[in-house]
Length: 175
Image (cartoon, rainbow, N blue to C red; front, top):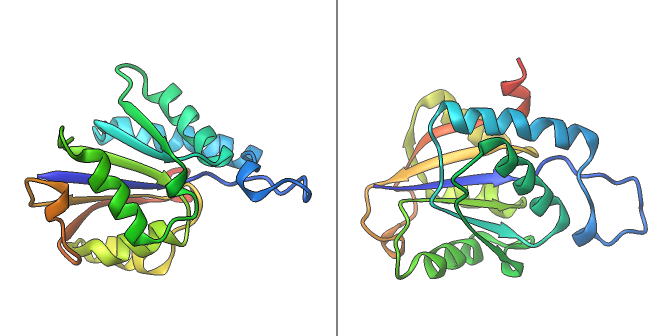
């Protein structure tokens, strides 16, 4: 079984309107949200083998906060500029290409919308009705979706075959 976790970057700051989108940092609210997500990772035993992260400032900052909270051992991390604002097909291509040779069992992608949300919707086929309804509605900043697949290799994964095991947002975690 393979597991794909999709984490949208935390809330970013718009304080400097002159700053290029790629270089926007996290807002204070975003920096506070990621420890909640990291705690959820630990509670649910969701330690990835490989992390693929957009090279944007806000995704790198999100991942840095997550890794600081998760502790050792640190998974292998690949920063990929192709993941910046990537559509679903590009994200899937990066996952497949990065996994070849070692076939990690659990990959975490830290990226952006609308690509992550669209990919989750494309891949999901099963899951708890409440989680599926929540996924269908939104994918706000800091959201985590975890899908499991009955496949031996990442290249074998097809649309509508994933089982949505987890879906949460920072707002849900702070209640």
